[in-house]
Length: 599
Image (tube, rainbow, N blue to C red; front, top):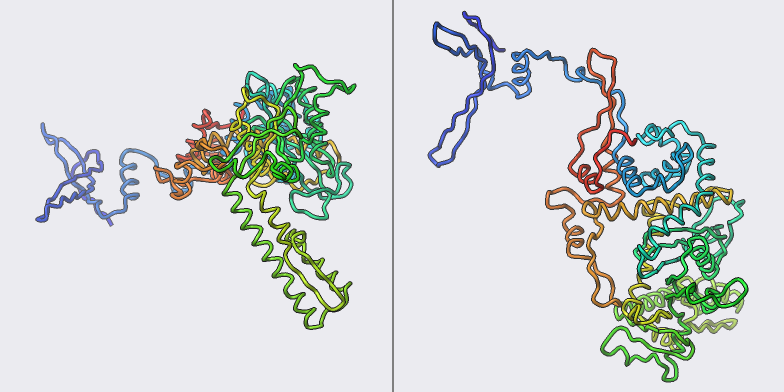
């Protein structure tokens, strides 16, 4: 209790007095007393009268008394303002800002509701990938729905927007090709292409077929889709194929797209082994009537040889011998089997050792699976050539090593031994790969050819982002062919956004923002010292934690837009929560202010 007794009038105020005390040890201590004082005049003098000592009160109580003495009107905590709504805002605002900077709205097509819906679908795929129906519900829970005017959309509206976007695909990709593949932006005139697959739920899509599943989903119908990028892995175009389409067929179609729809006369196409085959190479530079195209309209390529072709180069004192790699990891050779082409042979010792270790592990694992069968046959619990063969067949190819074992079966015996000659023949190729290209050495030396081929890792990285890491393309639930194509196109455009966002936000994430250029293109890539420090320290110099890309988006989502109503009024105003330093820097890196609304 504070008792105030005074015989004088005058204004009261809170005064803070500090004094410093030095102990015998030399340590300085600061003491503060908080007093209620009244100031008044006594004739010509100004006097101060202490009315109460507040030093023992909590700081918030002192602040309340001080505010009251200053004439402020205090209301109970929680009643001064009322937050009537609080909606996640920062993540969609950041992705939208990046989309605007990249000119994505104009790229999609003319302004209108269909474009707003398509843009919202792409931004949603980056910020919170989910099914279309889940996304439709999510729009009402974030500022994206209200600000883009899509919160009240129906499923029919979404499907109509997807159909509109799919019809715009050629125009969208042609503009992206002009930005990133045309000679002015892409002096090497180089493009990367690779093929992947994802499974579908349902059985009635015309594109659904059984094929080689790169997702390991056996027994599922699937689609194939090929991704075309610039040399840095920036997505430019995507094409969807039936699930049983082979790599060469997909490559033929993308070449026609680049040449005929994008109008790029000369390109160097980089593709994996098995995709750019000799037959495709021959057909690539032929016109529709089978005649050769003029030199001004020819395409070159960079690809790799398959194992049988490499084995042939090594056989009978062929041009590929181990002695070539005594002093270096790559060597340029020629062969009559590939006239007019350069062959760049590479040997990676690290990869060779890794494959040898993995092979031995798989052989040992297969022998472990077969051991119980051998014991059963020896004990007489399993007899008959047929039953024994069935049991062996169930396990011997579990690790795809059956070709390395010789199996002898009789009615009462089972003998299994390694085929060392086949193992040795395969081991001879460990760490070897041979690239083929007609690009002259004056335009692209051997090291640059290796680098260009290894850049296919960027397309593989994009597939990881599209399929699982960021955008969650799979599985596909759509039934109509045009809807499946629109879904994949949305994921590709979202990947285009993600590609730029990952680079821009590298200082805030574990992304290596400055990977070192390898001195030896054959050697494995290494992370920079900065990236290694990020991974080991987990925090930046200011003590803030580094994030994964998805983790940073989740953190940005905590920046909310609140509807605030003040006591005594019926008016609400929008107000952003105070951003964290990480959220501020994320927008600074984008070169954009934190917006109150998206538009």
